[in-house]
Image (cartoon, rainbow, N blue to C red; front, side, top):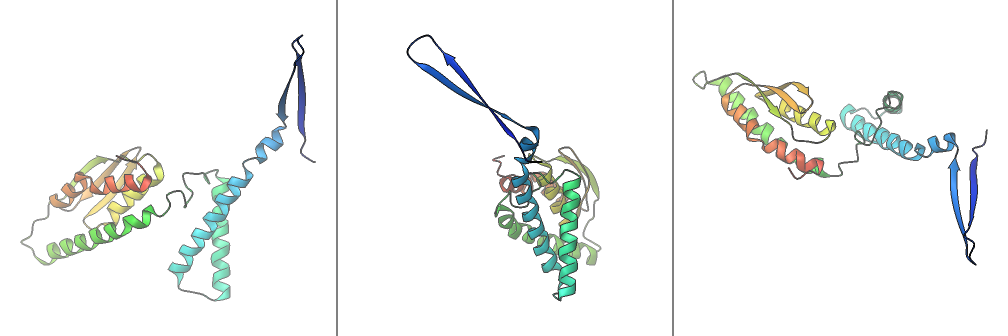
Length: 199
């Protein structure tokens, strides 16, 4: 059934020599619902492309059959996101631009340093281990970047994010030094910059 756009012309004659003409548009509900289709389709296409790129980098299999399975998997995942109504602007992979890639070198450095520290403590029984459970506040505005923060903490050896609830992250640290590094908040600040915040 074709979409119908109803146009209503309203004339207002003031009694003077001037005649005022105002136009109002009454849009059918179906047409109004279709206005967001372009944006949603763009998000779906971008999500499929990003997931496909990640799949290609991680799989290492480049036969036609395996790439077909990978493409089908990516399309199915994006379809599920659409059906669950969570294919929104916050989850769009491109919304942060290149800022996450600028954060990665610093994160890789922290992972390497923490790996060395944990390895030394495993190999040297004289080095202290003081496990600690504590909670910190995540200052990011969106859930997406808060999840990035919690995952980055877990990726760094010596610390594990146990729970993320609202803006609070419960963390287990292997040592007092690792806990102090998290509390110092450098990673939190850098991810606020990734998000585009100034805090």
